[in-house]
Amino acid sequence: YEVELAMIIGKNCKNISEDEASKVIFGYMIFNDVSARDIQMKDKQFTRGKSFDTFAPCGPWITTTDEIKNAQNLKLTTKVNGKVRQNSSTNNMFIKIPEIISKISKVMTLEKGDIISTGTPAGVMLNKPNAEFLKDGDKVEMEIEGLGILKNTIKFVKSN
Image 1 (cartoon, rainbow, N blue to C red):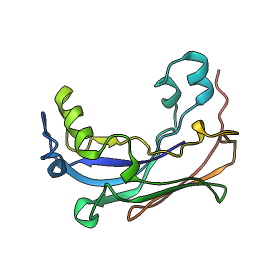
Image 2 (cartoon, rainbow, N blue to C red):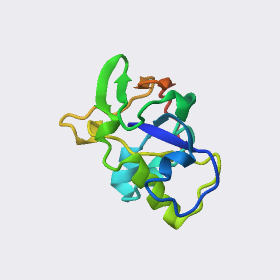
Image 3 (cartoon, helix red, strand yellow):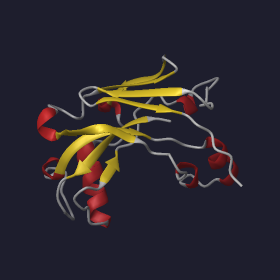
């Protein structure tokens, strides 16, 4: 689980330059990048560990670009059962918003309504000593300044 900024694309586009990137964003929302680390470590299939039902919740609504002064400088926080697990800023993202849009649009057409998750800044649980992974019943709250609070309760489901 990692709090990430999600961008919603506002128009179809291809081969967008970094300078043009902000013009194709309709809005932003919170994205919970849920990962089944046990599957990722066992299978060495990174994307499979992110592809289960109920993974990747996002919301709680879309905030349009005119409501956000600088999406590259928003405080973000993750809490589990009220305890802060991640506290950072979109300014600490590994790849900046214009570069993300530009690179993706070079290999595929972006369409109106596409959601692009930006990746997480530093502070994720996986890289911490004594990492505490999610358990059944945990309550996760993710907040990004100006975008609201996304709340999820973890429910483990047995698979065949």
